[in-house]
Length: 214
Image 1 (cartoon, helix red, strand yellow):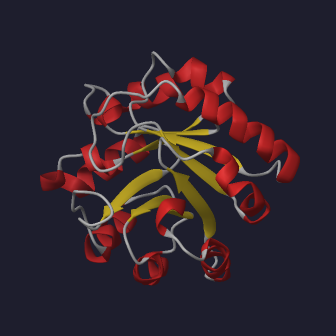
Image 2 (tube, rainbow, N blue to C red; image 1 turned 180 degrees about the vertical axis):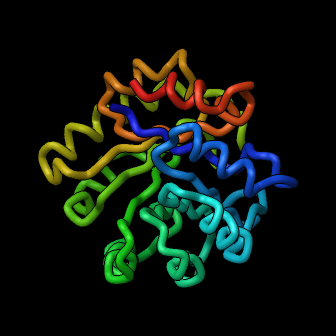
Image 3 (cartoon, rainbow, N blue to C red; image 1 turned 45 degrees about the vertical axis):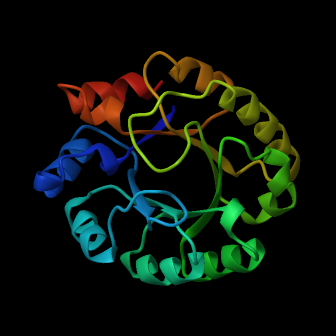
């Protein structure tokens, strides 16, 4: 069954703890946390103090997506919160294998994120060391964007590489996910979807989450 990781980027930050508890009660599999530094992407989000509160409110594991410069610095900031995954952008990292090993040594599952223009083949020789690859289906930085359809082809290409290199590695897709494209994503080999505005923009978080768990 497809796993669902609602992004708190689309939550009401005035009642953030309640919003986190609501998606957990609604049956989500992970809580997706977007960390942006205003440099790698043109937006600022939240730091470890806020995410510590999120972790306390959450009954599900955290999935932390770093959209930052100086990945190692941010890994050290967020590792004490014991997330399940930390993902970083390959476009920003000069020494990805070293950072993957650092994340794993901290007891966290390492993941790499690819922007919409980055070919999956870029990370073929890193796949054996990864637990997950996150494919962006929008340009990173802001929620509520329209799904970029060619992520489906990229997911299929990535799936073929994973089956050859590391069949246990999962594929996650983030951006514009909804009940209209979830079947196509599953058919393309995707294991986890990040859904922000689709879940938090609905009247029933639990029903929105369940509609993606196919």
